[in-house]
Image: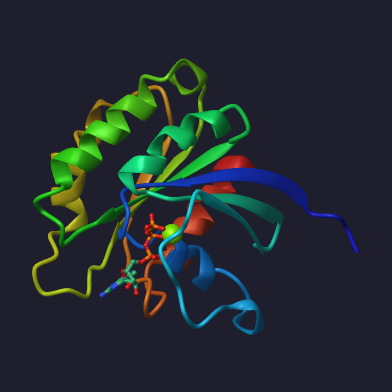
Length: 171
Ligand code: GTP
Ligand code: MG
């Protein structure tokens, strides 16, 4: 058959936000792993959609590894940024990391699509995706297409919506 277009995606966000769980859920069920552990450094993962073949740099969100992120910015053609919607205490840290990302010279002037997952929407103290986008001031992102989806990565809810949007941006 036709070879799918290859796209490099960076998966970023704080530790424990659910990045690895999301990427795992996007793989075919026979390729999914059962036990997900905190990522050390980063891990390269692959999944496919109807028209694209994604290579994902699933970065660790732990503070001590966040300085690795920028080394992959040049490689990235799109960004998936994951937020734990129930982690109100660290929403400000997530915003700081996002602002640093958006101001980085390898990101700033590029029209990279950014998909946000307001993840863990199943938890009782999760805030809405609208509230997440307000707290992160997403309306200030004017030079890049962006989209936010509420998600529950354990059940896989909201993920397809997001990935469909990303695919539309790239193809
Ligand atoms: P680092 O690799 O350390 O940066 O973390 P990560 O962002 O990759 O998070 P990971 O996927 O390892 O998930 C962290 C924890 O959150 C795990 O215990 C997951 O099972 C849990 N988790 C992920 N997504 C959800 C979700 O949508 N809802 C709930 N309730 N738990 C989730
Ligand atoms: Mg991880």
